[in-house]
Image (cartoon, rainbow, N blue to C red):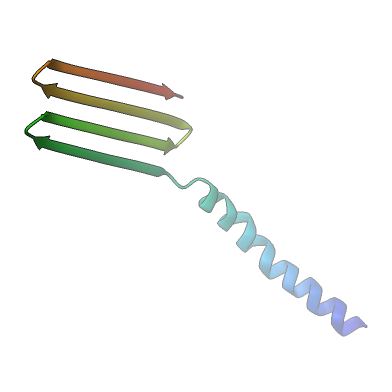
Length: 83
C-alpha cells in the first residue's frame, strides 16, 4: 500500500506544475477569423467581408457588404468591440 501511495504523490508532484502553467497558456490563446466574398457579373457587383478577433481581454467584430448594380449602389458596415 505504501508503494501505491508514494507513486500517487510522485505523480501529483510532477503533474501539478505542468497543469498549473500549461492550462492558462491554452486558455489565453487568441482567436482571429476573416472571410471575404466578391462576385461580379451582368447584374452588378457584390462584396461581403467578416472579421472577428478575441484575445488579450478584448473582442472585436466587423461585417460589411457592398453592392452596385443597374438600380444603384448600396453598402452597410457594422463594427463592435469590447475591452
